[in-house]
Image 1 (spheres, rainbow, N blue to C red):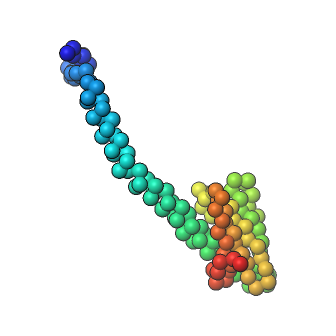
Image 2: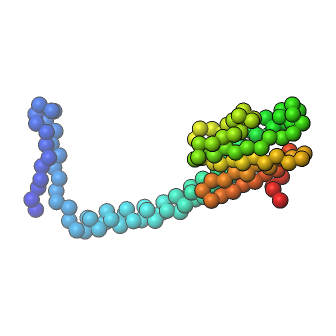
Image 3: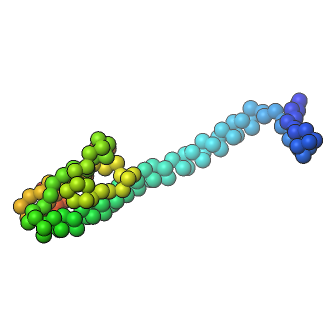
Length: 142
């Protein structure tokens, strides 16, 4: 078997590494190991994706709850709740003007607030998922 040498000159420390030719059996072995590791890690990756979906709901509910205090201040001041939309993908947010409310910069979720007599509804949507709650009381929308 021939041997190939990769090296650096003596000026760079005189290192040299000897690489032998890889046989087809060794290549198959490495390929099999990669496949086994991928097969073992695939369910973990799928679980991570599902956890990400669940965390969107958790984070979104927390963000939706943060709309309630400014809405209560609006109710006390004007005897009504405010309506508006926050859509970061379209660059629109009337909620900043009416309530002074803005979610995090990284949040790609669209929020729509609809005021009714005695309550308001917040609908959040992102990537085909929708979540709606009625406040005060955080009840699911009808």
